[in-house]
Amino acid sequence: HWLCSGGGIVAYADSARAEEAPEPPPRKKKVVVLGTGWAGTSFLKNLDSSRYEVKVISPRNYFAFTPLLPSVTCGTVEARSVVEPIRRMFEKKGKDVAYYEAECFKIDPTKKAVHCRSAVGTNLDGNGDFMLDYDYLVVALGATVNTFNTPGVMEHCHFLKEVEDAQKIRKSVIDCFERASIPNISEEEKRKILHFVIIGGGPTGVEFAAELHDFLVEDLVKLYPAIAQFVKITIIQSGEHILNTFDQRIAVFAESKFQRDGIELSTGFRVIKVSDDSITVKCKSSGVETLVPYGMAIWSAGIGTRPVITDFMNQVGQGKRRALATNEWLRVPECDSVYAIGDCSSISQRKIMEDISTIFKVADKDNSGTLTLKEINDVLEDICIRYPQVELYMKSMHMVDIADLIKGGVGDSNKESMVVNIEEFKKALCHVDSQVKTVPATAQVAAQQGYYLADCFNKKDHCVEHPEGPLRLTGSGEGHHNFRPFRYKHLGQFAPLGGEQAAAELPGDWVSMGHSTQWLWYSVYASKQVSWRTRVLVVSDWTRRFIFGRDSSR
Ligand code: FAD
Ligand code: MG
Ligand code: MG
Ligand code: MG
Ligand code: MG
Image (cartoon, rainbow, N blue to C red; front, top):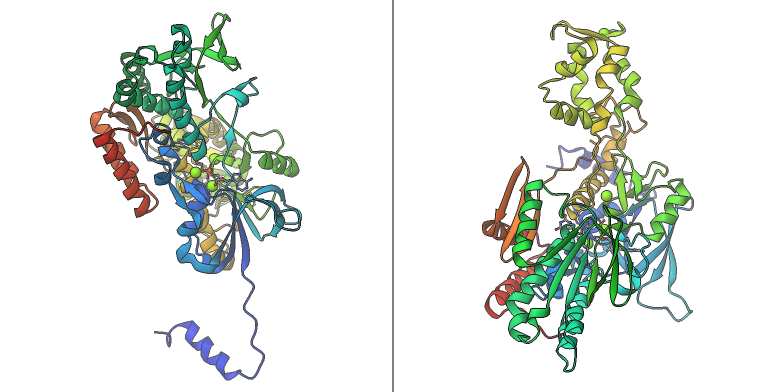
């Protein structure tokens, strides 16, 4: 085989010049990856690490399967079952990947370096700070909680972001039950201690409420029969409905199930202050403020920016944004070697109207100053790759093909023979950019971005050699990228609702709810586990819970 390959001939030529000093192999480019969550690990798993010198920084030496964190809060699944050690994940990559348990506290794009601090304490010289330089930086730092500066939230509320949070919640739920069981506690006090308040009716808050409710009715009422009647769960949601990123049918189903379960939904209320024993809420319509006594509160009302990201955004002139902006190839536009993926970043989709004159010129091959339908069709695929909003717009307007869209510019002309000038072309496309969509902050997006970016890194050399690529129509300085822009593929989402019921929204406007959906949930989440080890652990946790119930010790 090697005889007919180019490599074989080069090898012969090399051995003929054996006396000459061998050329040193080109230095491998250094890739530094910040974060080992969904985005970071997906990138690392797919990266051909023999091409790069890879260094990974994260203060936690494990990957956490976040969708199962709500189950950890009530002991349905053990914490150990939802984490996978980072070093184990990269075992096969051997010495190609180095991992340091540390926190990055500063990114310096001018020196192309990151400043880090050891997470396991300080070394003998008095500090554990170190610096790493990079050729390419992949920022996958995720997001933090966002309290919207509501007073008291940081001090008094639980969060559900990390594995430790889930463990603390579990301990705290049991604490409430033990506290309320002590003799000489008034009934009013018992009601207060056993009032569990969830602030935020998004998927995490709703799933936690459902888990907690199951834990109560399936396990705790039997163990604490004397106080079971005082237990109450409340969800406070500022919008009119819970689960507002889901299909309306799912929100309605979830709300009626929760009503039957006795979970109280306070929609249209905003939390304005939290003290050690009460939450101040304000009714959005009437403006009336009320005090809600509580025993335990969980804040899951939004995500915020990590300080190191905020600092970096200020350095590159993105100071006013909430998340780090990248182009559609996931690169930070202000730095040619920094990429950002996952919850810490958001893609700013290029608007078609910014490039409309260039597109017109490229399409007008015969320089006639007008475009025929054929000329437009010849570049249509490139347009749709570069500006996905075109397809979304045509879909939203129920247009079958581009001719329908262009007709809007030229009036009632015949499809086949129509010709447009630049003004008509602009007029036809002027509303298309209204369909630009932002991708949500989910594990699904983070994993797809990590996978996509690794693919680009694996093909980088090839693309430097063949810079034209399939895209002729970029007009935005990104033409040397021989890659299609990142495109998110939504595979659907689940909302477990407790009592062995779940709701799911799948591609193609397909909605399913009830017990069978819960079984679909079990099988999807078992199959999504990152290793056979965690898969076995999770499935055996589920089985153990079915047979023996949850463990209620701390
Ligand atoms: P993360 O996964 O948060 O990873 C960030 C990484 O950066 C971590 O390894 C962290 O340790 C590290 N890091 C933090 N600070 C530093 C620093 N200074 N220096 C170096 N490293 C640092 N999404 C779904 O699609 N489906 C679900 O069912 C779902 N359920 C969820 C349930 C819960 C309870 C939560 C909290 C989230 C859920 N999500 C779900 C959302 C999903 O977890 C996030 O969208 C996803 O984790 C984002 O991935 P990421 O890599 O950007 O960030
Ligand atoms: Mg990550
Ligand atoms: Mg994660
Ligand atoms: Mg994002
Ligand atoms: Mg022409």
